Length: 287
Image 1 (spheres, one colour):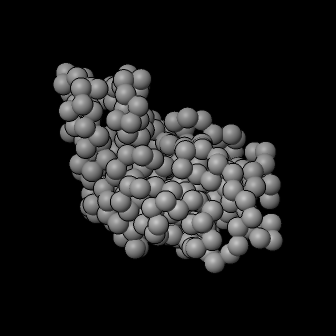
Image 2 (spheres, one colour; image 1 turned 90 degrees about the vertical axis):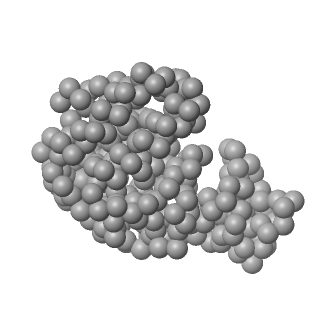
């Protein structure tokens, strides 16, 4: 890796293809044109292990043969090159198909809750926030210890969440064994399944990008789809439940599963997400 390397130069080095142009998209993401007209996406990240974790996640999701993800064209410690997805309009038909594919992805399983993708580092990321993948056998305790409490503590230490506000989240963690619903085996999760990582393509399919893949509870991916909205969400759920019925009471547990990503947002973006996180925690305790 060359520190002063441009995205286009990184693509040429990692793929062995000639580059004819590049166009910055957002942040560290660049669209690069290859000789012959093919487009690829290159992402640069200086955080240790970040792009390798994402590459491992994309390959793990692809290995399931279910959901569509861009192929990894090259990766090193700083750069990740993937195929470009041409986006189009969302459709109900694609949504139903996506729901079925997502159910199949989850059913492909994982060795344990918190298991990283094969070849992926334990120290990964969800968005810009560090996320450790530490395997566990019991979902309620793993979710509390490895997903909720680490971000709550960071928010309290930073002064973003007051100690008295943290109490309600801690109470949820204490009661997770009774709030979590029926026990389920570890699912293979995308892990950061908000609407921005769901691409509706011109080929009539849904493609998923930017995973924070790990073994987890399948309801967590579905809760992420609900968190910021998703086109044709009811059709996605219809397709999902057609392929794999959800456990009774799953809709009442959506907020419980949203607690983790909401606390990540508190850590990354501040007080604007605190009340929403506290609200879902209070609602979970009221069940």
